[in-house]
Length: 151
Image (tube, helix red, strand yellow):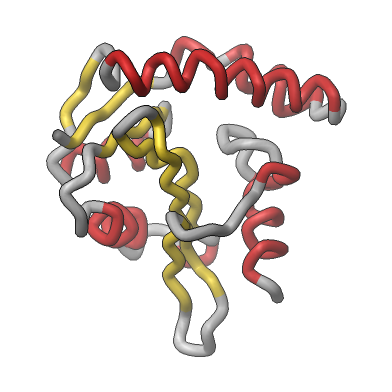
């Protein structure tokens, strides 16, 4: 299966992630593959006003509980860039805390400005593509997402 198709299939299963139609693979994509080269975990970093947001972390359900989220975070941390992530998932929260991230109220001024444009754009995209199930899910849990920052 092609990487992008695998990623889309994972996004379809996880309503907390961005819509599958927005699944992109680029320079800031991190994959972990099994012995046969098939993706089993992925993280996407997005530039947000001088910092990077870890905005998509997904592990294939058959490979969960093996520390792959922690490994993705370690791979993302291999630079001196400032990283942050929003999550409401207790497993991801635990992985972030173990990786040295701390709870925060804001990712900073410039990243916040960027998020003020990108987040509404994603919600608009969900409306335009009639991704009602994801839109309702994210709206219902909007205030449950917590910010974690690695400085």
